[in-house]
Image 1 (cartoon, rainbow, N blue to C red):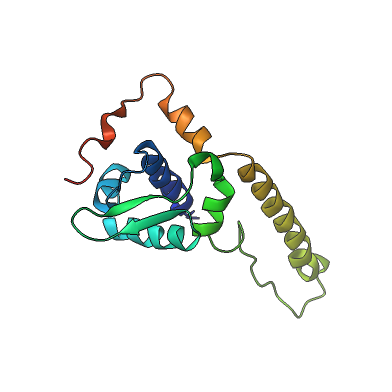
Image 2: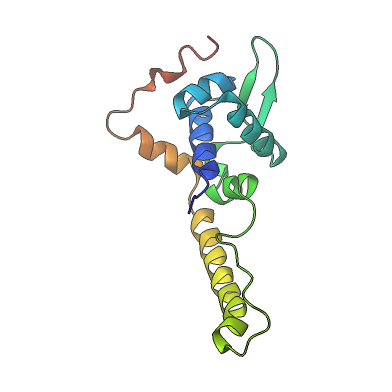
Length: 151
């Protein structure tokens, strides 16, 4: 079963922007560091922009930057901006059966799904982007990554 990497890429993208402290960062630059296509980054940036997490400017000297301080951005806000739906999808069991399990599995799994979604929201709400950046900078983080942003 495949899982989405959109949240991880969005956090990586915003951590790069936070590290560059307001300097415009190009999607091509981020894509190179994230190891994906710039189109993937631009699509995520559209969603992050709609969530009021970043601002962008087009043109040769353009790029994107955080709209607010990293300490004011929770991982939950990022998750909500780029992920859709619940953690898992429910299947459609056989409707016409005398099997008690098949008749009730959807209801039970909906309850599980609600608990998981609530736990994710609670956990991610407590973690700020600034904390992620602080952990990344710990020890041997090379802060020269923002020198050649617009090349």
